[in-house]
Picture 1 (spheres, rainbow, N blue to C red):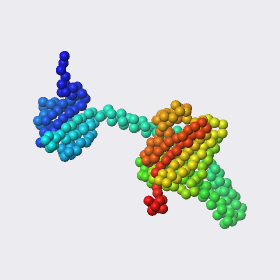
Picture 2 (cartoon, helix red, strand yellow):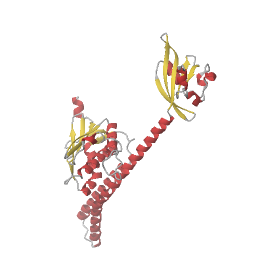
Picture 3 (spheres, rainbow, N blue to C red):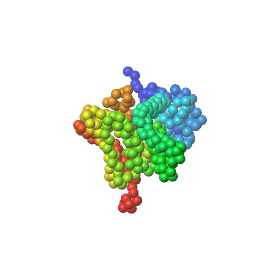
Picture 4 (cartoon, rainbow, N blue to C red):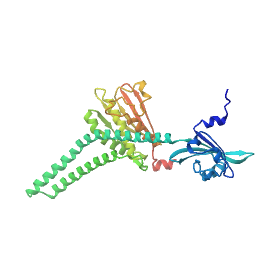
Length: 360
């Protein structure tokens, strides 16, 4: 029967173990990864460690570890990525050497990059799907101020031709035209912002009423087209949050889209929104009167790619994306569901007012 030794096992394991002594010489080398790196123990043991180009450690890392620190580093060697964990080795209470254990992380990092790319691709796809729905609604909404602009401009043109244009009439008509232009501008800006990825925006002070208003502006035409009644009462005393405004709007838009879809399963669909001030936190609650979420599906609601909708219309990342965005803001998203009522609550840290800061 073969007597296995630790050295035999290490030689068959895809890792590299090495020890560098206080004189910066390599005194031990073992592990199957050495072959991949082109390191042969009988050629390199006893030589200055930092003259061995393929050894996945730098002198600065060694000195930090020799100073008593245990940590991990990732280095690129010969086009591959290697993670090395370094640990000081003591003898008689003094550090005499540094132990390194290395593993090849190339495939792992490539897979992480692939998954990250796929996540961004799916998020972009989800945003494009949302934009397609928003665009038709906003086109209809833009038609209203355009009709106002056209109507007043035509009146001014006719009255000017007849010499009947008074200063009062000119001021009144142009003020209506300016107001309608501003409305068009606001609609277009909200659409432009929604189409942009705001994940790298700086945190700023955001108004709860503003976040809800913009999210509703983007979705209310869809609600109208679907025949879903929408109820929202702005806060009399607005509350401020600290975060990426665009991401918070996108997260709420996703929750609203989910509520709209759920409510369509009943005869008289409706969705209501309310904002609540809880002292150090604020919440935005979205309630629909749909049939509720079955117990068997509740644990999957925030999972990526899970959807109960037609998969041609949804890739199932709306709620999971919203959850990720909210959690980036130290917030929470939760839900309570029963037959005839489901409420999603977005809870976020509040920016304290001057009075609240003084009281604390």
